[in-house]
Length: 496
Image 1 (tube, rainbow, N blue to C red):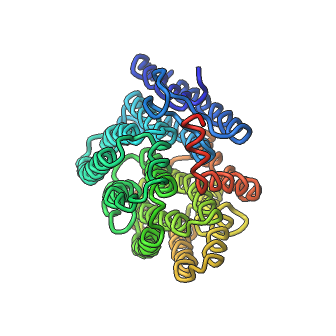
Image 2: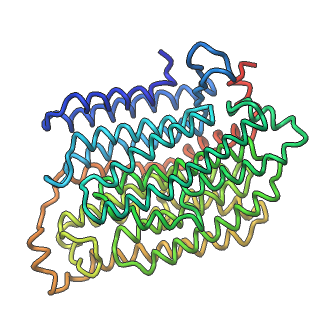
Image 3: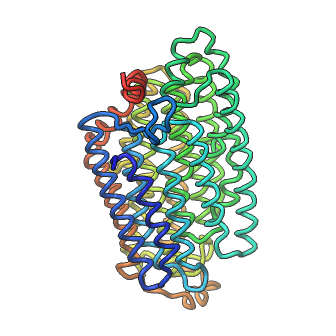
């Protein structure tokens, strides 16, 4: 069996097992075991890719471009690894679901369905199959966001589903135009055709449709309004999963398409991407600063930091792309962790509202440290991973002469720091208001090792990414070099 298929087959296997085996005492152990196997396979794939180059296989015995291509290059391998770390953390965190709120076997079934879709999107070499994996993600995420069936969840789920269905329509329309113009949907074959086509500028009509589709998935300005309207509604475990992975799939697809296909009109696209990156940073950061509900603050910060990832793509140099990938990987870990900590705060106090919180530093200093690590990483404080990711992007921006967007990125970092300090002051330092002390005592809960382990795991990854930043940068730089030289991708897939 080809190793390239494992990121799809492992979630599929455990999805089926959770459909068949529904005994409550086994499902958590089974999910954790599946996540560990997935993580091990992701590490193996990354080592193989870095050692031998791009891994490819074609389903059905047909040669490319006719068969369904599975392609894993350094960027795919890095995204697979980071997402599998998050999957392991979430699988442990989900065991502590509040009883009676969520039926755990159903959660784990759609959890592995979602991961199968995410991994499929990371490794597919065919545009139509990318669309299929996006739909798998959309359907499973809609079920997860409405799991519990409260009125608020259903409202959030409908908003989420409606706007993402519009994104799917743009995606499908772009596929139709692409196929009509080129006669193929294999990514490598498409890149080869467009590279040698004097009329390839006409492909901008398709590019705009794909840009809108991926922009909705990634929650860029001005297409982000669905995210803060829906991400705070489901159980915090679901929000943590979505925060770390879902929008990053949109960024992954955007980087893939704008380095492989849409390179014929860089002046037009780079200018648009700079404008969108700047507005995404500022609007998300300002909106987060005005919130007092922890999930909403963190949701708006997802949007703000998507802007940095788009900035890396817009710079469009190896260093810029490497910085964008580094920032995305760091953000996936840190953002998941901040949502997890918000869930632990809610477990102790019964509230996500900062006005009702306080005194947590004295009561649980370990939780305070676990919040501070990802919070400072997101704000870009050394020596954590976010500092090095931002330094790379800032260096790339100044070297390329993109001074305005670089200054916006620096100033947006101050907005992030302000919001993290606000959560720290309100939840951990100040005393809990007298009006809410009875509520806090009613929900009093002592956090155990099983509660803290997922956050400890992700905090350790954040610290290690900072300590070994040069090694991580080397990996992301290699991924960027492959992206900036699409001929390597084409030759690997087409067998030339």
